[in-house]
Image (cartoon, rainbow, N blue to C red; front, side, top):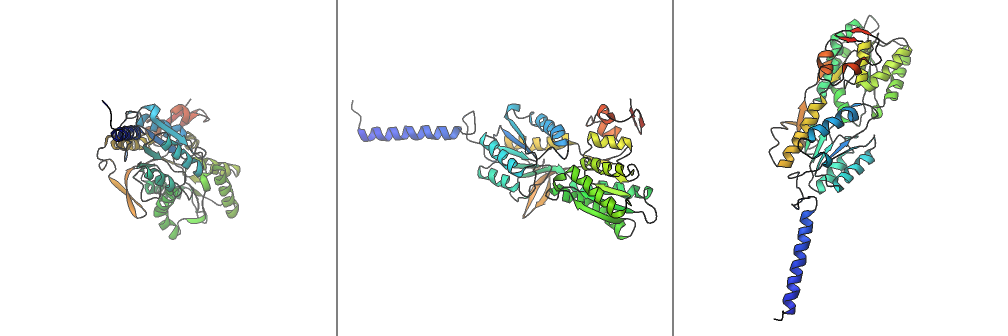
Amino acid sequence: MQLNPSRLIKVSALAATLVATTALSACGSSSGAAAPINGKNCHKVGVLLPESASSARWEGKDRPALLAALSKTFDPKDIIISNANGSDDTQFTQAQAAITQGACILIVAPHDSAKAAQIVQEAKKSQIPVIAYDRLIKDPDLNFYVSFDNVSVGKAQGDYIAANYTKYVAAGKNNIVFINGSQDDNNAVLFHDGVHKVLDDLINGGKLVSKFETYTPNWDNPTAQTEMEQALTKTNNNIQIAYVANDGMAGTVIAALKAQKLNGKVLVTGQDATAAGVQQILLGNQNMTVYKPIVKEAQGAADLAAALSAGTDTTTLASATTTNGSASTPSVLLQVISVDINNVASTVIADNYVTKAEACTGVPAGTYGPVTCP
């Protein structure tokens, strides 16, 4: 039998089309299924962390917590975790690399809340959902936000100062300094707003006098020490309260106070419940920290990723909203715990967030509130 040449051409073209279609359908999926859209049937997740210099939490707490939480749904080999080490350009490149490697859901703790919008837009091109983790990404196209109620972080710090400042002040000696975090981190702005919601009435009423306030670029600990030294010089060491946004900066602020023999005589706040921060609390150099159970935060992000992959409803998971430009971003907002010498054992240490051995490292043997160090 002789084939019609024109029919042979049509059959060959159809076969080529089928081969091409099959190849395209297989992209992004080892099973040959269509590439995931909006996270549905996604099996590979990219996690982007911001830095590690200002706080030990990102590598010491968040990375293992996210890996453990995501591994309940995703194969560990399909979880890509990167750290930008303080570089916006690096974080964007890492996002592109994760997408190239097949990540179809991104969990991003942005280094810069505004500049990370380019990550959201890059992901949007491929219909990849982005979950902002801990820090908001300022882009109305952001899909989800998982964090703590960050205004309440500042309020917790402010509430502690309001409840305890009278133990440190006297006539003509009621001065406070504010060492805020990095202004390009939306959380730092919210912490600032929260603490001022509590303390502005005390300042306006003359109970406290604000002598110095600054944001600290990149949450840089040495810069925070320089800022505290400047405040001490400006006031001739007449400082009674130091609002410090996190434990890392509190450590260097304490170093500045120690150089003037003022450590333990000035009320100092912190945040993150780091091992170093807890040690300073036991030593009496730092008064409080804010404990944010990161395991719950990581699980919140992982639960959203799992729901997106399964194609199930996310509204019960992300029941809150956060204003984000012209949009309201569905959010998971967790509560924080104020920690001082009185409850450090029943919170941070009891949860094994900081072990007793870590808390007692470098602390002389003795009893510190409910904690006894060998």
